[in-house]
Image (cartoon, rainbow, N blue to C red; front, side):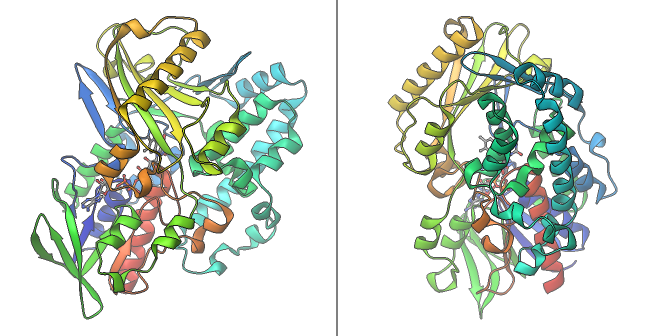
Length: 485
Ligand SMILES: Cc1cc2nc3c(=O)[nH]c(=O)nc-3n(C[C@H](O)[C@H](O)[C@H](O)COP(=O)(O)OP(=O)(O)OC[C@H]3O[C@@H](n4cnc5c(N)ncnc54)[C@H](O)[C@@H]3O)c2cc1C
C-alpha cells in the first residue's frame, strides 16, 4: 500500500481528490461528519419527493466528462444527462425571457427585447468562448502558487479584462435592463456582484448560452453517487458519521486526525471542509490565516432555502426559473455592502419534476426555492416564514396561479443550518467569491505554508465556488500532494 492520506469531508472536491490520489497509489480514507457523502450537494427524500439540497444547475458538462475520463470512464456509465429545453425562464415585472437551448433561439429572444442586440450577443459570446478556452484549459488548471501562473501569451493580450468588470462590459454592449440582468446572471455563481467581478469571467456566459444547461436524470445527487462508486472502485475507504475534531501535527508534519474521539494516523492530511473550519482543527501556532483575514474577505452569499412538496403540477414554470422582478442592485447592496435581510429579494425556483418524472409522485411537483442573502444574518423561524410568504405571493402573481393551498410539506434551510451541517464560515453557501483580489494565487492556499503534508481543497481555495471548480480543486491538490511526496 502507498502512503496513507486522510481526507476530511466528502463534498465534490474531497471525492475528486480522493479518486485522483487513489489512482496514484495512495491509501485513501475519507472521514465525513454527516451520515451520507456529498457535502453541500446532499439530497433528501420525503413522501416520494426527491430534493437536491444544494446545486441544481449542471453547467460545463465538459469538466465532468474530463473528470470521469481521467479514470478511463465515461459520464454516461454513472448517470444519464438530458439537455434542458428551454434552459430556463426569467420572470421580470413586465415580461418573461425564455433562454432556449441554442444560440439561434436565444438570439431570437434578444431581438424581441432589443432590436439589433443579437449581433452584439454573438460577438459577446464568441469572446466569452475564447476566455472559456483559456480559463478552463490553461489558467484554472494551475494550483495558485504564484502570480506568474496567470501570465500566459493569451492572458497578456486580455490583461485589461482583469481590471474591467463584467458589469461595465455588458452595459457597453446592451442597453435594455432585462438583457443586462440576463447577461449578469451567470457570474452570480462566482459569488460576487457583477460590478466586482472581472470581465474575463464572462466565460460563464459561454458556459450558459454556448454549452447549455443539463440535468442528470434522478437529480444532481446522481453525480455524487457516481463519484462515490468510482472512489470505492479505486479503493477509497469512506467513513460517514465521523466528525474530525483535531488535525494532529508532530514535528511540523501533519500526522493524522482525531475523529469521534479516536486518533487515526496518516502521512498526509487533506481537508475539504470549509477552509476556515479546517484551520480551527489545528493548534493556533499551525494556522496560516487570522480571524481578521477571514473577516475581511468577500464571501459568496448564504441562502434561505425551501424544499416543498406540492400536490399538483404547477403551470407556467420550467425546470429552472429566476424571479428578477425586483431591484437587482438594491438586493446586491443588501447582500454585500450593507448586509441585512433583503427588502424585496430576487429569488430562484427549481422544479426538477417538470422534466424528470422520477423526482416527484405522479401529478405532484417538487419545488426548491432559493433566496440569496448576506452571510452571518440572524436566522429565526419567524423570519423564514415571513420570506416564504413574500416569495410565494410574488410567485403566484407572476405565474398566475394559487399554490399555497397545495403544499403537502415544506422544510427550510438557512444560515444556522449551513453552520450546523457543514461547519460553514458565517453560514456561507458557496464559499469565497471570485473577485480580482480573490483570484488564483490570492486565494487561501491549497498547501499549508506552516505544516508539512497538510493540504486543503474546496470552494474556499483554488479555483473557487461551484461544482466544476470543486472537481478541478480536487485534481489540483492531488497533483500537489503527489509532487510533495
Ligand atoms: C444552495 C446551493 C446551491 C448551489 N447551486 C449550485 C449550482 O447550481 N451549480 C454549481 O455548480 N454549484 C452550486 N453550488 C455550489 C456547490 O454546491 C459547491 O461549490 C460545492 O458543492 C462545494 O463542494 P466542496 O467539496 O468545496 O464543499 P462541501 O460540499 O461543503 O464539502 C465539505 C464537507 O466537509 C464536511 N465537514 C465539515 N466539517 C467536518 C469535520 N469537522 N469533520 C468531518 N467532515 C466535515 C461537510 O459535512 C461536507 O460534507 C450551490 C451550493 C449551495 C449551497
